[in-house]
Length: 263
Image (cartoon, rainbow, N blue to C red; front, side, top):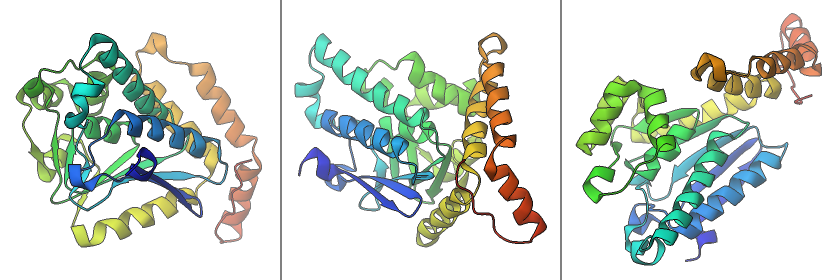
């Protein structure tokens, strides 16, 4: 199975899907797969037909179980190899975190290490009752960088972040919900339909407004002196100046579903 086979990208209407397809290893990710993820994200970002992105794992037993440890001897055995690997993973995380369209992580089963980082880079995280979360870096002797740690802290705060990182233990779905790591916990039989409905619901909203809201939430999380208030103001103005704003008003008055074009 090639890296292309292990990262499956597809588009159905306005909803793009990225599947981690390495179920025999609980969807563990190799260097080639990280590169394929980044390429797929860049393609989706450039495609105006894409309005929402869903990430999920194949096989039903795992979302992503982190790095493929079986490849550490070839991919992370020297200082230069570690640096190259870290650059590839951070590029993939950055592409997902900076993706200008809404993203949803559909999590079934194990979500470990890099899988947690991927989920944190998405806008929404919806898991099944069998989901299990952990960042096992402390048990493997791995370094965990500022960018990765900050994603955890930004979402769930320093107390829960330290509990996850220092214990390196697995947390169940109920614990993940309580700490704010996930938005929803659903039965396995209903999660696919729920996420599909959410994706379609989001895809039907105004693209410029969605992009503005995503960016403004990110800016709001920054320290005040790091926020780009001018950019936020420009994005808000672009929404009010758009044809979609006029369409939204007309649709509301006419009691019909709006037809947004992203312009």
